[in-house]
Length: 234
Length: 234
DNA sequence: AATAAACTGCGATCGGTGTTCGCAGTATTA
DNA sequence: TAATACTGCGAACACCGATCGCAGTTTATT
Image (cartoon, rainbow over all chains, first blue to last red; front, side, top):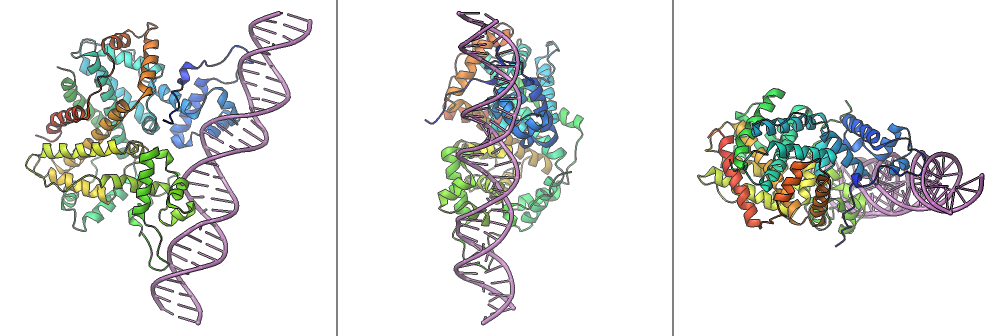
């Protein structure tokens, strides 16, 4: 076992001590700059050096606030989770309420495409905002059927569906050149004759219909409303 | 727009020219070594240097076979796709056949956990094996209801469900210390009193039941059998 | 008031990464 | 035979995350 034991998360370390001079920056500020950087140029553009440059300091200084770049990624993820509005009190319709919550989460992914990449390469660490989110989702499911375990798994599964749809919408919306090149290559290969079904499907199915955001949300909502009752006893 | 136009995939470039001396290696060999490396020590362990060392050559030599590390990742993904057995001819039960195919894909993910990380950070590029897979899936859906577009989207969605379940199973199976540390932290936070629903859920739901692989497959199969009819007209 | 302790900012640096360049050697083509 | 196009690869480039140690600053203790 080469595993190093699980270091405590960013949030278990105190933001600052009480002894020295007041820090010139704080985690919120650093996180905001990192999110802005990722929004602008993607997750790869968020290097400690670039971030330090953005903040007008040296790279080494950032390590007074973060133990590692992974800490920064955790903070970024939780910051986006905090964008979800949890103020709406749960009504009687738990399916509707959970669906609305999922739609909000999907919208957050649309605003910050790099979130997909982030949560993929890094198992989600529950920050304070994520815990609030989880508590809210459980509140919504209070009067829903099913055991607590089932509810927890359902919330996780809905989160997975959110990422699934977010990915799909991200690749079909602003993809630009990627899908056409892929489609061309696929058509060329299919034309060679060894993939009759692909050929037929490409002939039948025209180019992308390109639904609007409203249509996409409606599709997602319909799917959730159909699946959710089955997941929780009903 | 800082986007560089879509470079052709690995497979559109010829494996080798006709002029010079015979290459000492080929892509299949290199890909196999990379997969072995990833299986053993994770995707991060697959660096060009480590791979070259494994093959007994210099890092620069690899660039005679691959234009970039991304090419290597594409080859690795397609190699794993090639592990899926497509020899079984489609029977009349398209739901059963598609479910069996999905179970195979899920098993491949279990054998190569790094696949999740790979497909996440890199939009799937359709290699030859992936095209074979797609053609086979479309063959299964020949007599299923729905338009060609619906069938293509269904296949993609099923693929997404595979990754979702693979991720879930990967994190709950060999996770080790991660979940317990997370759970402890969560319990501590919930005990502070501001997250009553989380607290209640943790009290009710005991530790992980830890199902066997058969149970997990059965769960996945049940979900697919319930969802699939709804996706394709029915 | 004097001292000790703990903290901040950060230049310099380490080991690692993907990738490129140029050159010597080799096989094919004209 | 000469030109051409390839192979293998050592050296190097730019960048990355992270660490070390030091000067300066603030708080806590005596």
